[in-house]
Structure formats: C-alpha cells, structure tokens
Length: 169
Image (cartoon, rainbow, N blue to C red; front, side, top):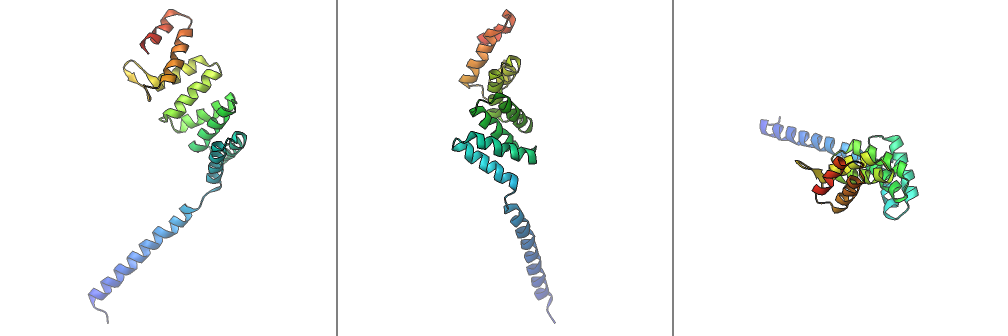
C-alpha cells in the first residue's frame, strides 16, 4: 500500500498533467489560422506591396465571412482610399469606426474620405473629433493636416458664425 504522502504526490502529478493537457489542446486550436485571418493577412500583405485591388478583394471576402472584423474593415477602407474609390473607402472606414470608435487613425481617414465625397458636415464632425473643440480635446489635437482641413472647411462655411471656429485652430 502507498503512504498518504506518496498518494498526495501522485494526485498532484495527475492534476498538473491534466491541467497541462487542458492548456495545450485549446492552444493547438488557437494556433490554427482561420480562413478569415488568412484573408486579412493576405489583404495587408497585398496592401504593403501596392496590390490595392487584390487587397480590396481579400478584405471584402473577409468581411463577408465576419462582419465584425475591424482589421478587415480598416484594410478595406485603406486599400480603397489608395485606389481613390471614395464610396468603398467610406464603407470600409465607417464599419471600422463602428467597430473601433477610439481608433484615431480610422477617425482621421474617415474625415478625409468625407471631405473627398464633399460631405462637408460629416468631414467637419470627424475632423473635430481629431483636433478637438474648446473644452473638448480631440484624439490628436496637434495633427496639423487635420487642423488645416478643418480650418478650410470652417472658412468655406456660408455664414460668419460658422467661420468663427477657424480662428481658434
């Protein structure tokens, strides 16, 4: 017969082995790359190498399979922006902003796309989120290009009251 100490040691070894097995088996499943992740990875690789049309295809395919994939949505917006496909860039960045509202790069890109689509009210709204307003700091208050774009939008405003914020930039 085993002593109590030997029995406790065997029980501990068994428990440790069981815990390790539980950690390793799910880790194998996690380590496998899904089709969606492959599409997103391929999309970003195509983007980095300047194959923007192929990147749009990959990101679009990933989003068809997973509408909640923020990287695919941002990638779609970014690749479409490079192609100057403003409606598709808008769709991608709007979805990316919905999924990652705190991402300032997405907010800034969406403001730029709105500007290119001549959606001036939306462009102002999103540039203000970037540079901020008096008493309400933006996500990148020192961003010069956003300040210039916002100032130009304010200046183009039809009445003097709408132009006033331009002097505060």
